[in-house]
Image (tube, rainbow, N blue to C red; front, side, top):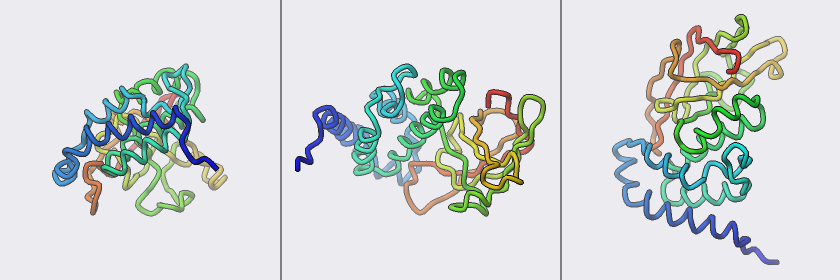
Length: 221
């Protein structure tokens, strides 16, 4: 049985390995020691098309597939795991929009996410709800055409630097986990605050806590 990668994926691995060794490795120890968020690397990975592997071409992606994304993640993590988190926080929200977003959201936000121009994050975990997502307390209550979001999300990668977030909250608790909804929100608006959380490692990847207090989500959120 031949376990060699197809030529296209082998080229992806070579590109990712070269990028990791030349752009990430030289300052990896310093970046982690000094808690440096490398926004420049977010942009460079966007330029190389790393985030768009699982995104259709019509939204700026390359459609290389999940294997390509896994290979890129592996090569980056081999050099510096914190930078690997950047990859997930850009590709993940973009893929979520592909799966569940409307056409307006896809056209507006997927391109800047996969180009590394807008920083993304996932806001799921809460102080009292980690792996048990159904135990979350955050709520989003209908208000006109939009929603009012209240709740706290903890241990969120990229929280302190993100522009956009995929936020999960209950819209109907009577339906239990079936009553959860995901919203794509702008973290620069009023009603949201953030604080940094310290960790034992991967310090170049910031982690924080987001608090939403009567945060208004517009109709397209």
